[in-house]
Image (cartoon, rainbow, N blue to C red; front, top):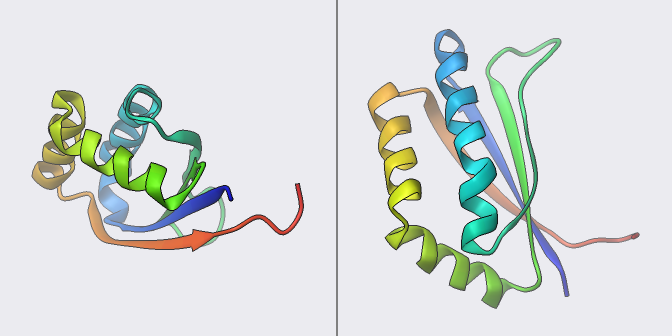
Length: 102
């Protein structure tokens, strides 16, 4: 069964540009490590400090393999470090979704 990892980010609203750089960096990293990136989404209207990402996997086992690859991928490690140094992400929450319709 396909599963989607929905990530909700609480951002420092004064560091949104840094988060956009972080999100764009994942465009190549996530597929290279085995995830199907649906997209990163920035606030447009209303709340200015909440962003989202959706990444799809064939199964939870596929996600676990992806996570293992991320931990050793130089570009992923550098991107995690970038976010820590910039302190643009205040909170990161993951929710697992399954499709109801296709």
